[in-house]
Each structure stands twice: as structure tokens, then as C-alpha cells.
Length: 299
Picture 1 (cartoon, helix red, strand yellow):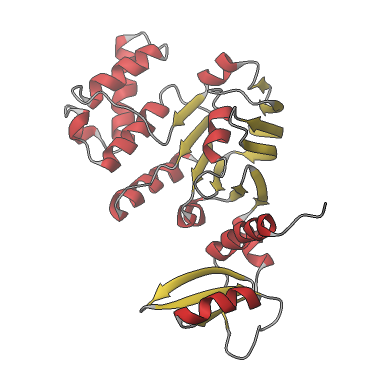
Picture 2 (spheres, rainbow, N blue to C red):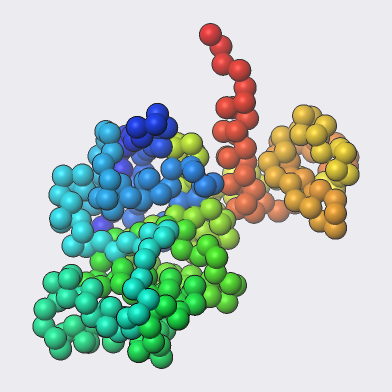
């Protein structure tokens, strides 16, 4: 199974073009969609999930035309949005049972077996009788995945799923996604680079509605191999270094900025070459679009 997106465009009523000729082909497994907040990730996810209309372009899931056959898509789709509501005074088991009924599982015994399997798969069986209002953030996210897995979907979309989770909950959630992604298309939309680095064999980077990179994380890292350099500087030197060098990222270490620079050769003797990380790939693409946007255009 594969998902093919071609020339997808979306402009909102306020004039913001959220998607600009987006082209992606996504196969079974984990696909990471990276981008900063406001990059167009959620718009793309909602459009794939048939929750909003694009202005132009096409989306096909094997033989299904997503834009025209919305009911067919919804039968094989599992969707966990960035924000979703839960009834706080109902138990996990009862709400899953109700959702399974709405998904068309009308036989009571079959529905009970499905609910039991999902609660066990998401490590929520111990809390099956607990009201959802008492769940932790990670438990709510795992419940979100449980409801998304009803009816064995072929496509699962998760939008910013680890935001706000503590490290232990995040690891449990990512392990669950990794297991699910073995036989399903799972699209992980996030701004957290580590989520993609640890899980995804394919990825895309999007900013300002445009796809800046699509391919394997390993290929993207290899392309920058030998071209990333670091240097510790004082805060007063930061502005001048940004003017002189292609600074793609900066972070404070012990109160002093450490900058990462992309350059074909050593910028000067004070820079140290370092192994490339996916974060360097991400920031180099995002930085390029910011720089381009800041440059004056010819009239």
C-alpha cells in the first residue's frame, strides 16, 4: 500500500497559503513529517484525513481517491489529532466499546474482544475501569492510539503526539508507534527531530507550506557528511558570526553559545568538524528558507 500526494495546494480565507504544490509518496512503515509550528503539517494531515478540502491537487491511497471517496478513506483510517477531547467521566473500556460500535462492530462479543486487545496493546488494561479524566498525558495519548486502531486501519496519522509528555511516557508511546508501523502506513507529524531520528525510515521536511526534503534520514545525513562545524563563542560574537558564516543552529552551553555551521571547507582554524546529526539536516533546510525569505527579490 502507498499514499501518493501530487501538487496539493491550500490557501485559507485570510490569504495564508498553507500548502504549496506538495508532492510526497509514502509507503508502509513510519514516515516522519518534520517542520516548525505553522509550517503546514497539521493542514496536510487534516487534508489527508479527509477533514478539510484542498484547493487543488490529488491524494490517492492505492486505488482510493481521498478527495472524492472520503467515506472509503475513513473506513481504513486511524487519526490522532494534535488536540482531541475525551469524556472525563467515562471509563476507557466503555468509551472504546462505544467507539467500536460507531465503527460498525455491532456484535457484542467481537466488540469486547477488540476492546480487550486494544487496551492490552496500548498497555492500558490495568486502567480499563478508570475514568479518562484521571489519565496522565501519556495515558491519554495511548488511549488516542487505541481508538485510532479500531477496525485495523491501513493508514494512521498522528499529529504532534509526544508534545508535553515526560521522557518515560514519550518512550513508551514511540515504542508503540514503532510496533504499529511494521505493517501499516504511519505518518508522524512533529517538530521534534529526535522522534523522527529514532523511528522513521522515511521523512519529509516542510516549512511555509513547501516540502524542502523527502527521502531517507540516513541519506540526508550522508549528504551533509564532513560539512558541519562547531565553535563556542561569546554572546557578543553571535551576530557577527551569523553574518560571516552559514550558522544553522545555536544553543547555550554553560552560558556560552555553541554554533553549528554548514560549510564545504573549514570556515577557519577555530572551528571543529563534527559528526552530522539529523538536527543539523533539519535546521540547514529550515535556515535556507528563512534566509531566502529575508533576501530582497528582484523587481
